[in-house]
Amino acid sequence: MSAKTAATTAPLITRPLIWAGAWFAAWLIARVVLESASVPTWGRVVAALAPTPLAAAALLTIVRGARELDELERRIQLEALATAFVLAVLLLMTLGLMELAITLNRDDWSYRHVWAMLPMLYFLGLSLARRRYA
Amino acid sequence: MKNRLKVLRAERDWSQADLADRLAVSRQTINSIETGKYDPSLPLAIKIGRLFDQPVEEIFTLDGDA
Image (cartoon, rainbow over all chains, first blue to last red; front, side, top):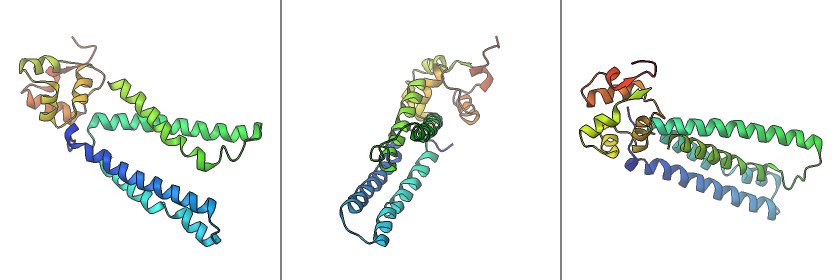
């Protein structure tokens, strides 16, 4: 069993947060570039893909951190992700149907806004799972 | 599943944090096991049995058992 105690779990949380922060910063920069500058198409594609390596680094640290988690924390994370996944599918399915039902404002419901709801769903799931085992 | 973890811990005058350190798990895990909200994995149950020098089935009992 390679579980860590609370005192040693801090890096398991901070490292992914640092990489996720860098990923988000790169996404913001890419968005600013794509919305304001007159960049050729190939440059626009490069800007859109630029955050990907940082996402890969965040993914690696998250997976490594998950392997080191205490068994109850792993259970909590699994329940949080299960909740978030179902809610994310529900959100996207409902948006798809709403697109057919009414005219959605694309500026309000584009991918660049909707993705931000997915981490919120994860934190909602995490909060519910933590409450269950508190 | 019921367990005698809290009693065994109290007999040794250990806090939840003390027991968590000895088992290399979080204090929340110990609390959740003691309150019956979480059943430990088999490796953790065996570790608990060894720590208290008792068979696992004397520490953990199924709800239907006497």
